[in-house]
Amino acid sequence: MKKYELIYVLKSNIEDEAKQKIQEKIKNIIESENGQVDKVDVWGNKKLAYPIQKLSEGYYVLVNFTAGIEVPKEIERNLKISEDSIRHMIVNMEA
Image (cartoon, rainbow, N blue to C red; front, top):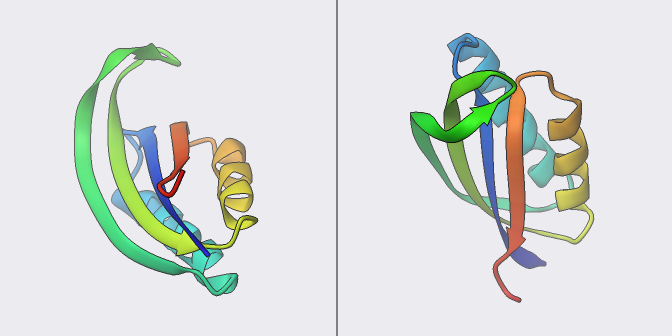
């Protein structure tokens, strides 16, 4: 098990229910592989450094978690599929 940090940015104009659904999906992916969510820090709506997909604002969420090496790949796959996800990055904290 390794420690990871995930930050993802969602479209700021989506409903709160959709934001919660994405957070729950990520949590379920981590826990389904015997991982553990250590901390979820919701930063909320922030101005983007540059326009992405013609958007100037995004909804930021930071997740610290411990999991096996397959979990980040699955999270990344799901965030790439999601139409509400603008950007994401997963960093191995033990490197």
